[in-house]
Image (cartoon, helix red, strand yellow):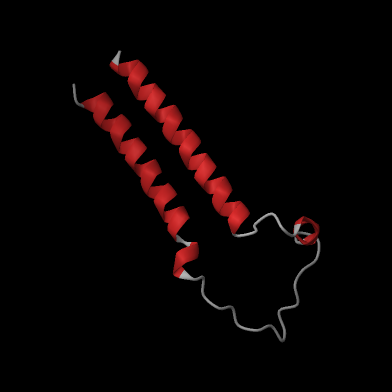
Length: 85
């Protein structure tokens, strides 16, 4: 029964992490400029006369950091389950 519970929790956490990443991407408008993103590999940006990049605001990094932490927790949970009996 515990193996079934572990895989169920793994699936639930996977769906939650994927949903959180998708919601974050939609809210930060990651999918808003598909036409421009389509040409990025083809057109090299002009490096002369570019403005210096401003840093990413801290609140834009909260969701990815939480997702990484949840992924690490799942890995640790599986490792503990395998090695501690």
